[in-house]
Image (cartoon, rainbow, N blue to C red; front, side, top):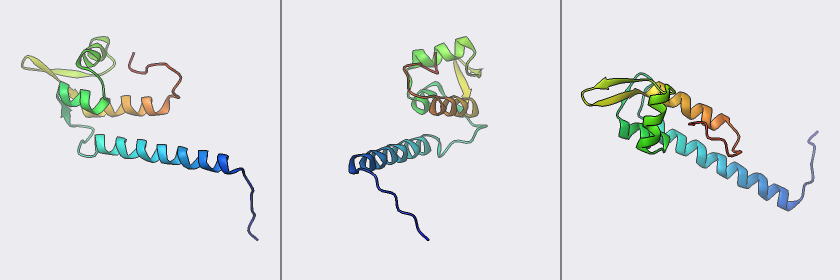
Length: 102
């Protein structure tokens, strides 16, 4: 037999709002990684676009060892799998002002 639960309209609207937000986050994440495989190499610009960070922040991640890289001429190449790992950690951390990239 079906059960019915009664909730306030404002609570239901809040649930729908959060579901909408989660859908947007999922779609954004998918768009950022859809054409990349974990063993692909990224340029500095591609890394910045994927993580939505500045070049100076990417260089800071590289310098601190938080993301692996190889030298390629005068520039560096970054493993997409490492970037995906950072994205997963960012998505898993509650938004309380702490910066996972720090």
